[in-house]
Image (cartoon, rainbow, N blue to C red; front, side, top):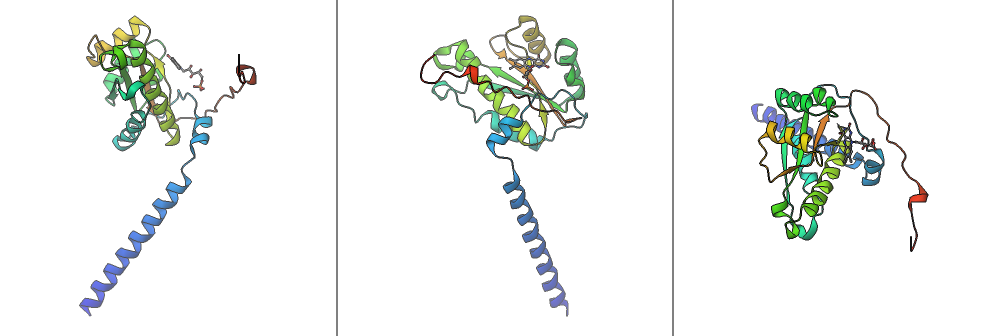
Length: 202
Ligand SMILES: Cc1cc2nc3c(=O)[nH]c(=O)nc-3n(C[C@H](O)[C@H](O)[C@H](O)COP(=O)(O)O)c2cc1C
């Protein structure tokens, strides 16, 4: 009798695991495709104040580091801020990043000229910008909201970010990207304009 009970118990657990893994597989199938994410992305500036999980931040950072870079140099680093006090210090010092007060986290994409191809500031900034866009797209894909707020090229804003986060002088804090759970429903803007396209030559 005892053996039968154990057998039924093990069987129940196995069935549960199978159903759960099936559900997870279904979730994967439902993940939006790349073009849907690209066309859905918008700047989100209103957040609920809920934290963003470490797991979600890790996924977003991985997306950032999947970006292309000149000669594969990856001249970047990412400062992740979740501490409310630090988020508020950044908010107070930056004129156009007031949405940080309700963001769950912020990622600061830092460009490192020393690591860039030909040690050029331009490549460090271009490459890190690609990572920044990947971060925005990953947040969108995960149902989170995000917005690029400028640090570079404003010296006063870069100084605020450097001072708040102890970033060395030779590292460029490109931006501050507040990330959070959207408080409302923002719509993407339609920016498609055929006048911006030149087929074959200008
Ligand atoms: C380089 C750069 C700097 C930006 N700086 C700010 C900023 O300081 N504050 C802000 O609220 N949005 C900022 N934005 C977001 C833009 O305002 C936004 O991308 C633009 O209005 C288009 O809207 P969308 O992102 O919803 O498509 C910045 C975007 C870029 C690319």
